[in-house]
Length: 64
Image 1 (tube, helix red, strand yellow):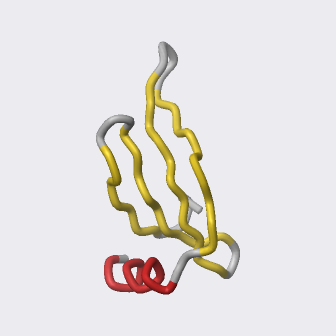
Image 2 (cartoon, helix red, strand yellow; image 1 turned 180 degrees about the vertical axis):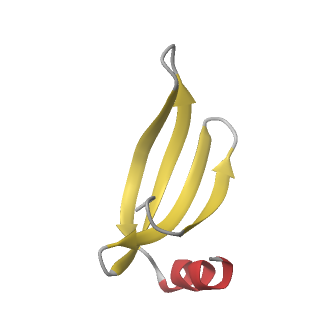
C-alpha cells in the first residue's frame, strides 16, 4: 500500500495515529496505523484495515 501514491491524514497525537488511503491491487483501502519508537528505531503498528468508503475515495482523488 505504501509503495504507491497514497493520501495520509493525522488522526491523533498520542499515540501518533494516522489514516492512510492507498492502493492494494486494483482497489483503494484505508488503514489506521500508529507510529512508535523503541531502542532500535521507528515502529509502525497496524490498527485496522478496510475497503475505502466513498468519502475516503473522494478525499484520495482530491488530494493525491
